[in-house]
Amino acid sequence: MRVRTTKEQLDMRDIADILRQHETEYVPHALLLKEYYRGNHAITRKEQRSNSAPNNKIVSNYCEYIVNMNTGFFIGQPVAYTSASEHDDELKMLLDVFKYNDESAHNLRMAEEASIMGEAYEILYTDRDAQIRFSAVPAEQIIMVYDATLEENVIAAIRRYRVYELDGGTFTDYVDVYDRLCVTRYIYNAGQLTMTSDASPHYFDDVPVVEYVNNEQRRGDFEGVMSLVDAYNKAESLTLDDMEDFTDAYLVLKGMGGTSSEDVDELRKNKVLTLDEGGGAEWLIKNLNDTYIENIKTRLQKDIHKFSAVPDMSDESFAGNASGVAIKYKLIGMEQVRSRKERGFKKGLQRRLELIAGMLQTKGAAKIDFRDIEITFTPNIPANLQEQSGIVKTLYGMVSQKKLLSLLPFVSDPSAELDELKREQAENDDFDEADEQGDGQ
Image (cartoon, rainbow, N blue to C red; front, side, top):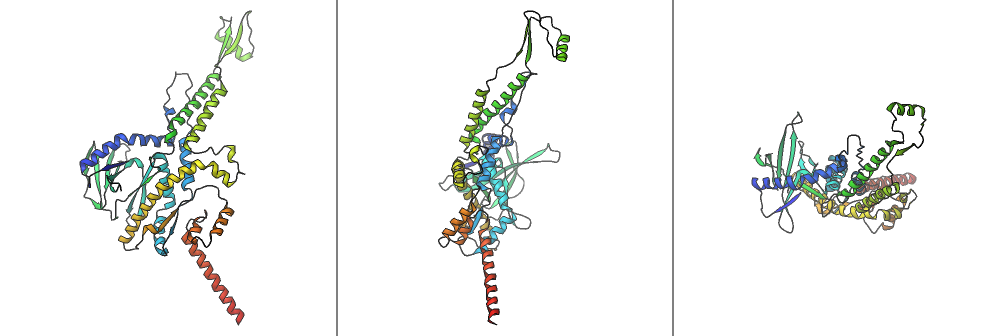
């Protein structure tokens, strides 16, 4: 959640007002999105018709499918970093921080959270060993406070979270407020804040909370098709209810009013039915229009894929012999979604780089200009390595070697790969020189 204010600093009353707004306007919807991702859909609360009537609650979790497909397509391949300057040692220091934090796995988690919630957040801090760390925080816990200028500068970040005692029932609500210099902790109870300790410095150059937005509207990837998913779940559940009603059909005996329960048991045993003159027997069943029902479900299914822009990968059009270009055309909708994700995520990564570079300079470890770091995303789709290698070969001499290496999907660290290439070339040159000297003797 984000709020804007004309104040330069927040007092305790401001924080309490923001928390009440967050609790009533944002948290319920945010938690609903996470419940749908986990598979707790509206159909699970379907009411029982009667004690004996079938009451199936089928969950077809398209929400999870949409998130997983979009996240894997967007950032299934690790983000690559290259430096526009000649100071590769500085880039190496940044990459060491990323390695220490398992950055690729962390990015995947952030992208998944943003896909579900429409936004994701991480907090940067230093651990006991004075190492720079960054940790993902659930989106429903964070409130970003911006000023009212066109630049939308971050004034503070508020984190509200609950800590349970060992008994699992007792808990305490905490509120951490990060400003440009310090972090202050409060206990939050019944809308009231109580400061637990004095503000402590966090040593970063700015508010150490980074925001990653999924799109400009801050909407989750399945948020627009939740009603369609509910309709599909209902159609599936009612279809199975009707099937069970069909299985539990009644046998109607005409002109056999004197039939007893013993007669019915005898009928089941011998599989023979004796009818009086004018009598008859037939099953009382519900007539099911299978074609109509399946058409409805097929239409819902197509609409879910259409409006979420995530294709059905089990469709025959995604045959294994489809060319790379053909697959890209089929994924054009996902590519539009991915491009929007990339813009929001890249802005967050640049913010992370800025904060880390500032901390490294504060520690005296390095002076890094984060603007020299180029960030490259690679869509996670089946790649034609021969075609990709041909493109790299064609561009050789026109584009830097680092950039060319970043275009290859199997190269995750272009700088390290370039260093290794130079080392191998140096070894080969030394070997050739030694060989020539041996021949001369």
